[in-house]
Length: 87
Image (cartoon, rainbow, N blue to C red):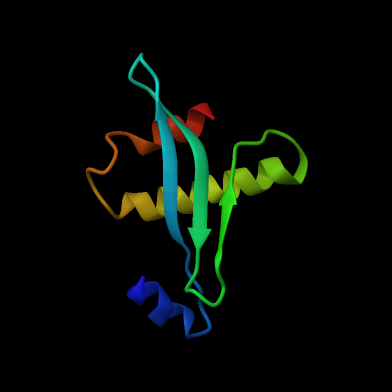
């Protein structure tokens, strides 16, 4: 994450994302966890699916960060917005 460390040294901040996906037999992917991390001093946080209250809102924000980061890397998932709509 050297690029994230360089950016996070200034006033705008970014998150690096990693996602753990479950592959169903019908060929669909379900997100099990999303990790948002800044550079080492700030650490990282892992978010899991939730539907209600604050946890649900935070889960949707984590998915949004993942979608933005994934949109920059073409070919990592065939259709990343499909599983974002389904969860």
